[in-house]
Amino acid sequence: MLQELRIRNFVLIEELTLKFDRGLNVLTGETGAGKSILIDALSGVLGEKMTTDMIRSGFEKSTLEGVFDIGALPHVRSLLDESGIDCDDNLLVLRRELFSSGKGRCFANATPIPITRLKEISDYLVDIHGQNEHQNIARIARHREILDSFSGHTDLLERINALYLRLFGLKEALNSQVTDEREKNRRIEYLSFAIKEIEAAKLSPGEEEELKNEAQILANAEKIFNDINTATELLRGDRGILSSLKRTEQCLSSVSRYDSNVSDVLDGIRNSLYSLEDAGQFLRDYERSINYSPERVNEVEERLSLFASLRKKYGNTIQEVLEFAEKSRRELEAVTTSEERIVTLKAEYQKFVREAKTVALELSESRKKAALSLESKVTAELRDLAMGNSIFRVSITRETSPDGEIEADSAKYVLYPHGIDRVEFLLAANEGEELKQLRRVASGGEMSRIMLALKNVLLSSDIVDSLIFDEVDAGIGGKTADTVGRKLKALSRTRQVLVITHLPQIAAMSDIHFTVNKNAAGNRTVTSVKRLTRNEKVREVARMLAGEQVTDITIRHAEELVSATERPAP
Image (tube, rainbow, N blue to C red; front, side):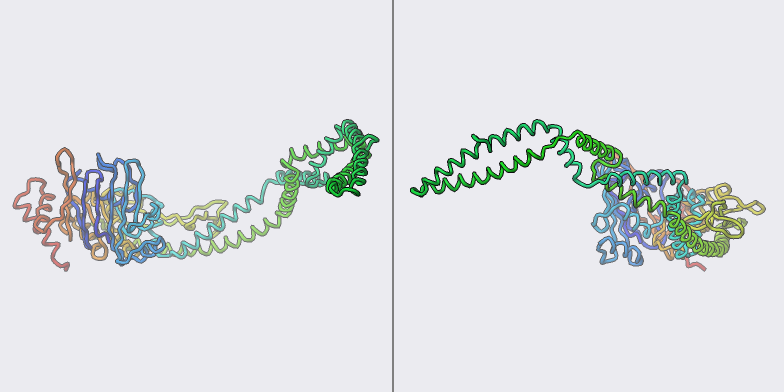
């Protein structure tokens, strides 16, 4: 239940706190006084769109707060627990802040929450029926939602939705498998060729680098031979380093017999001698291995050219080429074995089609039964609302298609996430008229009464604790206005009801009455709201009856209206 609405720097409101209670809460005031601003503020608290032009001129931020008693709303408690929001005293404070920069913030009991979670919570708190609700009732898609809400077959709706999603996934998988036969054959041919070409190359990681090194050596073979030959001569020739070093070793070896101080130097020369002898042997072998062959040059160049060609087609490196081959083998296997996969998918698809058919037909029967009951109850409500000659019907049809998933009664029907039914409300507003779509036959006043009739019928399945009606009594008056007021009063016995109205008959039935006024304060225009005493309420009802010229007669008439609503119903 909405306990308080706190508004700061919002449109024409500088600062305002409204306290509501159970029963019928009524707001009245002249046209343009700002009654709809209050609904806009509450809508903002509940997560509806806000724009920066809603911030009161001259201020940087607008703040809206709603205080709710959620003691009777376990769904809200569960959502708060999921979000880690404390709510020990059954009070929930929702706060919305909007800055002139366009940025905004949302809070639940001072805990920051995303706007999506705010809307999710709000769905269980308040149901606002504005003048645009007439358009919602006229929407055909809304009719199925209303019927399903009345039917209470939530389990069937969940099952058909899950089956629809499953079938959609299977259909996508089948479409990806069943490709054009020519495209499939072209793919097989390409993959087979690529695999064969790569396998024929007998690639191995690192081979390309080795061949590049060999190609460099072969390209410079003559220079390498000459340089190695020169190095060998310098090292091993008659006047080479080894010859001189051996003589040096012999001389120092002789000296060491007489003086041990040269032993360390001698050891160093001997180690160098051993290393140079090894180097000389390596150079001799290396010189013998240099064998320039034009045939080998061609072989290496052809091999490197093959590598370049493969890399150009299949990858940036030989490793990537090998990986491409492995991937192609797997794809080729998948393509060539896709027929088996298709058979499996088709079997699975048909299995779920059969299951979906069972659930869809069961859901359809449930809707048909519920439709009869809804027709009867709404017609009875309309009779109470001075539309006794009206006929209300629920039309349930199905869309046929050659590609329809659900086959029944020698026809194929299209399956949607909500089943196979198309639900539409029809109305014959007067006796003798044919049934037509609501938007084509109902006036604004009739739409108001149809909406109120549906709300009364659906009340038992509605978990929302607070209902708000924003001038839904537009287009009615007289006895019908009195009847609408009594319906709203009846709703308020089990729900908190807040009504913005211009009808004195409805205002007189209020449990709590507020007036909304627009006044000049300094150089600014300010909207203010006042909670009325009983005497003030009588005078406000009198104003609504007679306008600004309130007389003793209109006051007596207003007193009679208010007193009549205070007497217990017979």
